Image (cartoon, rainbow, N blue to C red; front, side, top):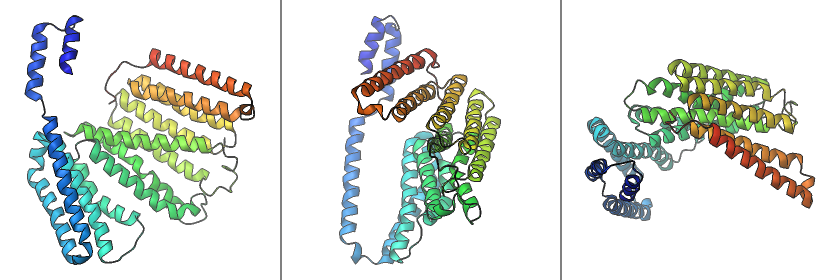
Length: 382
């Protein structure tokens, strides 16, 4: 494929023959036998599946302690390999190290489930996940190389905190019942990955890992705030009958978001850090306004769009092209949804459908023009 591109670039006068020859030489030196690696991967998968099937067919015949010992031996083996060869793999084969980290982490997670199965113990799922985070989380933080380790750590954290919150759902919105404060704080914890990662990005040899961890923590805050803005359309949002929302809960979340934004801006004083901190401050403002302004479709939509308009403005300041285009698209989509919400009676008629279709086309056209005209140049989203 790159040979065809080289010819096109030469014909367009972007490259001369000497430059093209240097590119070909570099590609030849750094080429990877993808077909061979694919065959090796298929073979490894077949062997792994075969082992799983053999063990599964004889699972009940193997004593529980023997199974646990073998499982623990595998886990100890991968941990030992990471300890002895981790630094060398990080320099020579970072993706190999990332894959080994993932396998080790999953061995640790399945070992906890295996212990529960052998000893016939039961517990809420958040408890073994929290134990896994305490045992394996430091390993992923110290050795993680890219998005794979970051997403495993973040996804497990989110699942654990919300599994903890689910049984306590009846006490979320009532400050006079024990547990509301704990649930609010615990479900906000994944957001704290963002300031932690922002602090370590410029101080670590693994900036890709910390960048992804900061991004998912930041996305968690923006996504949660967006959902709150959408939910504020409910007229029972501030009536006191809604068990899932209270002003105190939202105010506490706003304080946590504001503190996280300040920490990120201090850790990364450039435009990117300023934009991230400003967006989290805007999230805090939306959380504070969602409760008193709830009950109106138009106001809820305006609150949502104000959040994403702020994200678009911060993206322009930081030079985040992709985030800016996403913000414009989200605002356009919310306008389309609002048009259906306000004209639901007209939708039963042909005129209503024609009007809604023309409005959607107009919004889509306007969004494309705005995104193309005002989006920053293509640069790193760091």
